[in-house]
Image 1 (cartoon, rainbow, N blue to C red):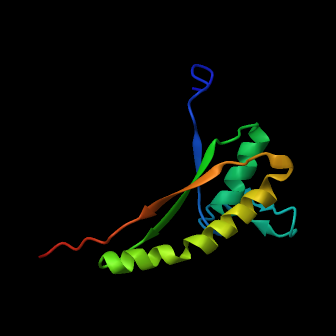
Image 2: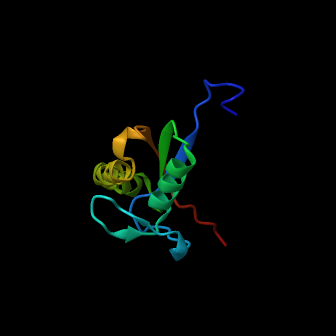
Length: 117
């Protein structure tokens, strides 16, 4: 796609937590800063992209939660500052030498919907 139009921006979806959404334990990677092994979505994805020589232009943070009203929905967003701190640490740990310096966009907050029976 970028070969046809280099102005196109391509992002990668990430989640908070180095072991969150761990689908395959055989895909574990080692955090070079801590020495710990993780098999969560974000470290496995970022390591695979780095190994393929692919650098995302931006990162998309998906966080889902349910709320029964606008006030509860806004409360769910209260963890975003600490979430982003954790995400940036993961990106820093997994992208030594400045491999990935993409912006992090937020997505995924939702209000729950209840069907009347």
